[in-house]
Amino acid sequence: MSKRKELGDKVVDKDTVMDDESGDDEDFDVLNVDFEWFDPQPEVDFHGIKTLLQQLFDVDAQLFDLSALTDLILSQPTLGSTVKVDGNETDAYAFLSVLNLQQHKDEPYMGKIIQYLLSKSKSKSELAPIVELLSQPTIPSIGLILTERLINVPSEVVPPMYTMLQEEIQWAIEDKEPYNFSHYLILSKTYTEVASKLDAEDDRPKKKKKAAGGSFETMYFHPEDEVLHRHAICHGGYDYSTKQDDGYSDSKRAFQELGIKPQGHAILISADKFKAAVEDIAEYLKPQA
Image 1 (cartoon, rainbow, N blue to C red):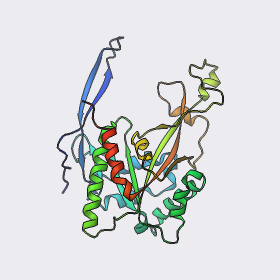
Image 2: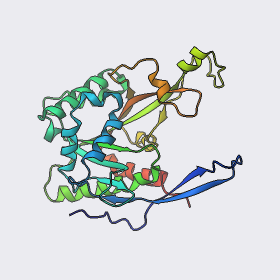
Image 3: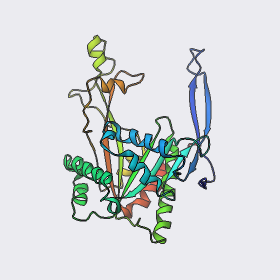
Image 4: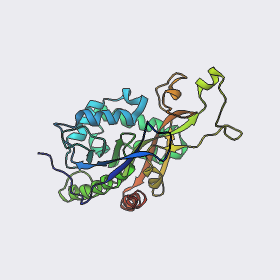
């Protein structure tokens, strides 16, 4: 039986929708949406969580058995959260969960994820601490945090998920369950803007120009990642393995001059720093008055 998470106040998303019949930018409607937090439920959440995992892993999602990964997340319903709008029977708009890499390392689908993360970390010197942990004969008790949300879901839904996860881990430890982690490895994604192939083909004028050298700033799908960096042993991005054609970056852009190139992103935090990181996320993303 599903239970709604106990939170006190709901987060309200104030989404602005422009009035199509007016050219005045000051005219818009405000859509208030109440978000609710639930335990993951095997009976209703398989499709929603699997879809969010596909979004999280982006073009490399095809490399993994996401059905098995979703089943594992749903096998521990007292750990982690989903965020929904229209009640428990609907698909999740966001989710957060943690998996014990040491406990599940012998499962083929988890072994493939571990080898993938090891390979990606080896490609980036800043991720050397991850390589050191994942290369040990016996992998330490690392908590792999997986979290994703639909693109228009406000970041204010995130702090309650992390706060509740921290509490649930503590309760699980008290019950002698295998969640006494030494580290947390958080998977995420970033993006950079890239010059548009469409503009080049159509000889369109470039409205946005970068400084000499053509470097583009790394941007975050999850703004809480920048907070987590402050507490991290290491963090860094990596390219996806699945190659895309030249038009892929343009397919990711919307109402802008530049294309979008997503990258995978990994953050490693020592367990003794996790509480402070969660508190900082709550402060950084607290709803505006």
